[in-house]
Image 1 (cartoon, rainbow, N blue to C red):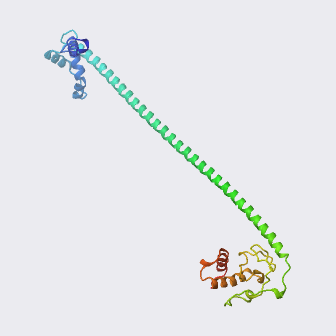
Image 2 (image 1 turned 90 degrees about the vertical axis):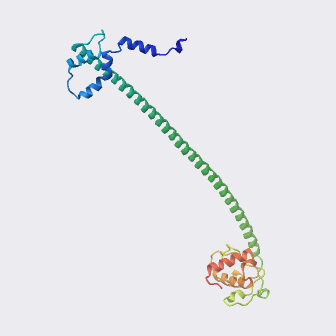
Image 3 (image 1 turned 180 degrees about the horizontal axis):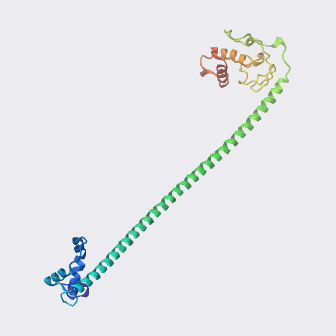
Length: 277
């Protein structure tokens, strides 16, 4: 037999024999609160109790039947012992409750910290994404601005070249009236007589942004179209759009067969002149 295999039953029996199987103290510790509850505030009759203790064999520490004084003293001592146990148990329960509350508070604080970190991480991620989008937008915008500047530069160069070419053409000696030609145009209702005036074949076509010599304003809606009346015969561009628009529609029932320049003039005429045809 080993020490670890020996149980505690024998030790409990030895302690019980030492304290007395019929110990009055043991009985009071077990039944003091129950007896007080049953009496409900009435005073104890110690003479009657001591006679009953002797009758049932409950003894004091000396193994004798207790006297009234001995029983009272033991009663008070047991009361103090039980009160001390209750306080100890209450303190242990309170400590356990405080520990549980502290653990709960620690868990809640840890969760709040994790939640705050998650929110902060989400906010930081959102800000980084917004910064990336802003940088991408700024880069794209810079590229677009650079492209626009490059296109504008090319357009300026083209206009300069076109203006130089038109200047050279304007230096050509105009033809005499005998050299004027008349365009082969159908006579249509709504087309003014200006559309049928003879034209000087040596003069260059009027271009968009050229200055109208009669009004001082720039021409807006495209260049002269080959085979159609020139803007030189008109004071107002709206009149030119009306005549050319009617002639275009006569030659082209739909816009499908028109050149891009003719389509632009046709759309401009329809937008400027309601119910053109």
